[in-house]
Image (cartoon, rainbow, N blue to C red):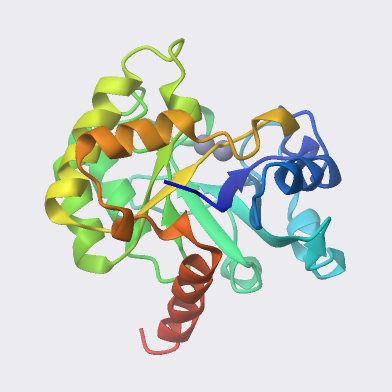
Length: 242
Ligand SMILES: [Zn+2]
Ligand SMILES: [Zn+2]
């Protein structure tokens, strides 16, 4: 399976990542990646950029080293109600909006509360992709998440960084989620979550997990740049109807 789009990467602006957008894009070009999501952390993460950063995206070129850039965010869920740490007026101008749960930005909760927060964020029409549901820090009903994703048509990410062997407990959670996703047939995205340029486009573990769990290639939106761009365009069109 060839993945030509990496939609989840961080630059030095995230505060705990170590490469620039240019370095990430050059690395993507070398690896044959055609579409690169620049998705720095939302402002409630310590060290993350302030809102001015997200408001100035119009200066970023559409292509760098031949790689199309999607300037976006990995927004944080900040409450059990699925609220995000970026106001709507910024979200509307972004090319791509990823959303996930992160320890410092979210009050924590039991499985029911975490699942509710995640599903409420998923139903937000300004959210494009939900990331790393298999992280063991947050217990969630992963089957319900896979089911709802298929119902709403909102993709869930299988996050390559979560699958690194040092992240204990993540593989089995992600595997369970992936099997549920294979069963319900919802859309999936594979993301590197690179915090350094050499990790851009690194998706081997996510590919392996998707394959062994029975996720079909047709489910994986970032197999082709056209497929993901068509999804994002449709998502933006449907906002007006929501
Ligand atoms: Zn994250
Ligand atoms: Zn990330």
